[in-house]
Image (cartoon, rainbow, N blue to C red):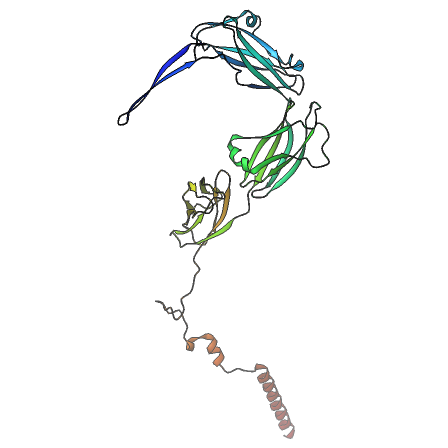
Length: 407
């Protein structure tokens, strides 16, 4: 509405070439403004952050407004400062349907929740606009938690004791909210792979310490950083840096393809997504794989769990005989990854047998077989023959000696 208490009219017409036309008469009457939407700001303790709210004059006539800031409590008086000087109290003229920015500073001095209201008054029309503001004090810097590392498709749980420096003593019922701030490119994956919860096990941690349990269960290899944000309802926000590393999972299976030289051999298999919904996928061979391997399709939609699955065809075209070919086939979605070891093999050589025939007779006949020829020869005992010859020679010599003595 652009006026107060005045009835404004309009006509709404709906038409269709075949169905015809509908005409609606619309009337409205402007009321006094209600409280505006909440504005949330933050700043480190001992530092200041500048912010602003934008006011738009909704009336069709210029409007003079006065601006003042009302703190929510005693501790909030010094936390907020309106940056208008004397202009806010003297009045600011805003043209019809024009906008004006109202800057203010937030300077927390303690780890508490601060609040205030920025109030705009139009005395001539008895109108006011109230803009509620809450300010959260943050720790000056984030604290490192180290690294969580495991193999993909394994589960790792670790407990951290987070020191909330500067936290103000509150009752035990003070609510603590935990939030994970991932990098944008890994947000979807970590939404299911990383979980954080408050550990209330006994004995409880001392005051100023928040004990949390972090569970890391990645489904694919990744290296990334996240921030854990801890916020107390009574005020205060802390950031903690955590590095996450998931190494390659074990090989899912081995695919062996037998192919002849300079010809293509292929194998096909079907695969479903790990979850109940379909997901976009990419399929490729790792950089250390032989170029003789290819996969189709290289991208598309992986069918959901329980369905017939998406068909993949792996092809192998060897170009060098005797070389060993191997590769790693990777199929991945935004949340999951599968890895297959692919091995290329040459056909085994089988010599032709008698029953298989052949253009060349490669068999030796029995009569020409060297082994059979050796077996047919008469065996000689050369030792025995040598001893007999020696005895015969000795006998002849003795006989000749006797003849010589008789003469």
